Image (cartoon, rainbow, N blue to C red; front, side, top):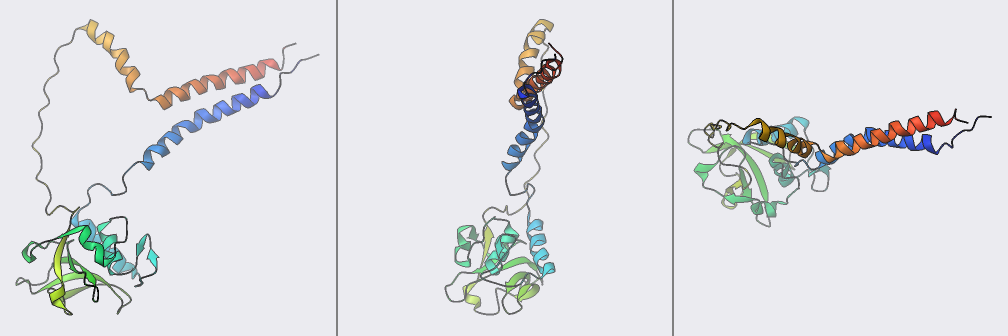
Length: 235
């Protein structure tokens, strides 16, 4: 009469095989979660593109509703364009921006009125005229119930004395100058004996722990399968 091994060996082999397959993907998901939210290469052009996207989508104005993580009012609109990952109220925009002179205004800066009665913020997109008497601005307006892009008299038609230019503190005023190319020195000659002794150590350091663990689990999987298959026919 044939003697069968219990199903424990098969279950253990299946579990080990599943762990070996899923471990690299779990490690990859953990690494991707640590990637910063702000994309690299963020620039003034990206800020204007973000603002134009809301204009094209005609996002309705609201002080209580949110669209893709941002409040649908004037300061939420600028927060989205600046990609600060939080909807700052108008009265707190000065905490992430600093005052600048009029002549320093560049696309992506703002005209800010953080007074308690008439608070409003407008995204500056560029001068409309050479005399700098008006500019192209983006703003989320309750009167139009959507964001607009329009020519605005500087600094603003209503209560102009309350508006001042600001620059986002996380936005560079101009692109950084390219760094000079670095010259890599030629490696020093190394004897074969030294290279041979150092190579295994470097290889072991470069192998990630997750892959080594997956390899061990794969070996356990093969052993468990062999144990389960051969045990069914042994007497």
